[in-house]
Length: 278
Image (cartoon, rainbow, N blue to C red; front, side, top):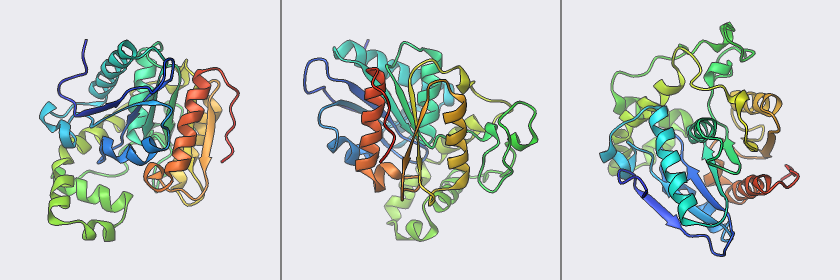
């Protein structure tokens, strides 16, 4: 098969026989190009980046739900395995981490190991400004109705950007830059609905491949740290990689550290013992 035609995708082949290939999966209101700083720091690896369907260069593919993004990633992974003779790993940032985990659960053979940096999982009960739940079914802390979305997807994109980055950063964007983010609004709404449904989209405790869960330091949002710690405690064999001083956008602000987390994912796929100090 070939890479999905609907996806705007870039491939850097593995530089040596047997070298690992890593597929980076971006989060909400982001794009594949945001991993370029990290890519430059892992020259020993093959790399695949792409705009998820509905975003930026993949808007023509239409908006899909979480399962659609999982299917796309599995198709990308299948082609990557066919094109390289080394192992294939996947690392996702934010909601891209949910896509990676969902794909690894759907097909445990797809990846040698996976990484997810601060993947949002509001069904566990850890959410911005909300109560801390136990992550168990029926826990009142796992209520996902904590914030209504805007009726207009473009407005929701602006609100999301201001919340995740800052209102000042939104004001600094050019008119074209703001229009680009607003155009990603429908895909963003699809992302948010996918993780705020009636029940969990998957059971992460069933993950059967080596996993690294990344989080920022004390400066990042507390609900992300609570979530990642929970994952480290409840996912069999998982390790937590903390990037001190980083916020949610660590792939942009701390690319050296994010590259180190990526190397840890590759090492875990090769059976190496984890070292999470950085």
